[in-house]
Length: 201
Image 1 (cartoon, rainbow, N blue to C red):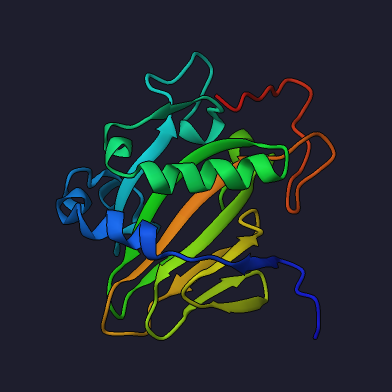
Image 2: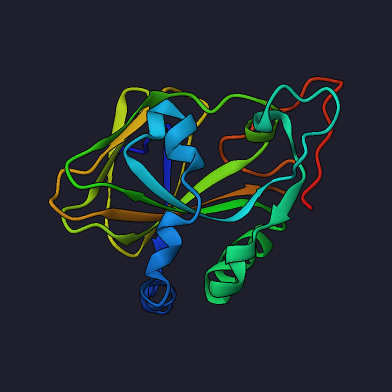
């Protein structure tokens, strides 16, 4: 099997407990629509934010892409097992958990091509855990496409141009989170400029 340059499959996860939390809070998808309203490439998604960038933005930050500090969102109280899973993955690599978002890509829609730029993304690995995806989740990064299946945990290189598709007639739901790896670790991380600092809080 050829090793992919922009993807790493970590393994398989029993997602039933996480899906149960999601099913118990269906109203959560409509509480914060800022991402699909303000980020055009994400306009076909719905989102539940569990950990997000600290607000207000600190002096000198152009936008949230340069903010390392995180805040635990109010909705996180409804998803304790989900948050605990993300924390356990971060701990398993000696890293620190960053932002955590549940993302539903609407039926027969896409996340449009984009690159995750900024100091925050540069030094963190992005994980995807597939919670629901009837026909698989095609995700393209650079010139490679991985089809992620339910229960699979992946890391991919979000610093290159990437986009996602939902070819099915049902929503595609991923748990997406970032990990600041231990020094010298990580898969798709790059050093900050000399002025950059990072915190996993």
